[in-house]
Image 1: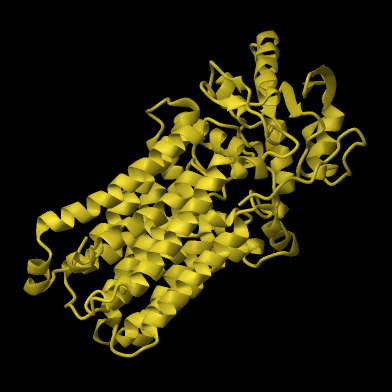
Image 2: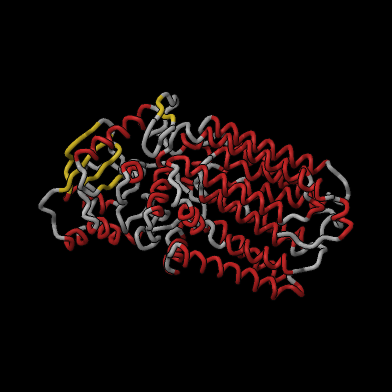
Length: 534
């Protein structure tokens, strides 16, 4: 929502001009959506994508986060998955959801911008920033989703300190963006809400109490809405923070992963260059109110936190610093008529978008989460049925899907468990997902390490008949669970790339399982070190 603007600003920017400026942004976003719709049907990466497919499948079947499965993904992603539940678009649903979210983000960012600043440069720049993860990753992802939410919160908060008067529209904008931000990824929501509250406490002046109440009230309203709609308990919401507490700081392995992608370094360099241009705007006195200059510096520093703490391609963390830099540059230069710094920002944004297009066309993201599994350089096979209908892939995925059909045909009444990178099997075969387990296997990321006994107990309670693994892949599965499997299941088939285990009829009592939960895994179960996940 926008604040009231002085009459001279409105007169200087007739509605027709403003509409035309925004349309240029919509055109660019439409082109990005078409590209994403093409690219997403080229290749599949298993490690991150399979749990996401399973999440959407679970939400379609009415699963309750924190009750039916262990969840550490942000509530906003769960709400998006639930909103998609009535539609059955197969593999494309993840990208269709991302296109809708990206459009909503662009609409919000332009609406939050005063009409006087809705220039072609700003509208196309915002569209480019929003399009970066869309053309690179294509599918919905909690990292880019959180970037959009934090960007909207920044713009709403930034506008509270310009020279225009506080009004109900500004209060509503700040309240709504705080509500949505509170449901975002932990390493984005917490730093940005904390930054807003800290700044309002110190520099809020006469609006201090109003700003604090608005932000806190909005955040609490967002959490309450998620608890009601999903539904999930407040304890489940808190668990999503506690379980990943160890991910708050960058690890050596996380920093090493920075070198994995060809797009990471140029992305960081271009983002830092955009921030440098912003600094040239906020340092000289008079261009912006002092408090807005401080807000820009504080929030752009906070925007770097996801870059150094996410095990993810940095293009998925680029939107936020780019939006902060662009909005600040335009706000600081539009009255002077200077277009140099705005032009520089546009060039840098275009550079990041071109890097994203390169990464999207080369399927870098899919390759980074699918090495040694489903990623193959040549996607010569077109899948013509099932969940992945229309997807072009290599032979491995095509063969695995055929093998799954053969396995299911001989086990029509049994309950299945699919191992790492194979979680898409539930949606592909349209069978129930097991309850009480994490969506993927990564202690400290998908579940709290202390929950291993609870996970083994839940695994046993599911009364699973058949286990399906991608070869020897047991990436990051708990040693105690592998020990349980080695005692209760035996290898009965080796179909191509898949290993199939069936339950031994004479199972040990559950109490013996829990007593031996920390035993080392059997020799035949090899645990691969998997790629990063966010």
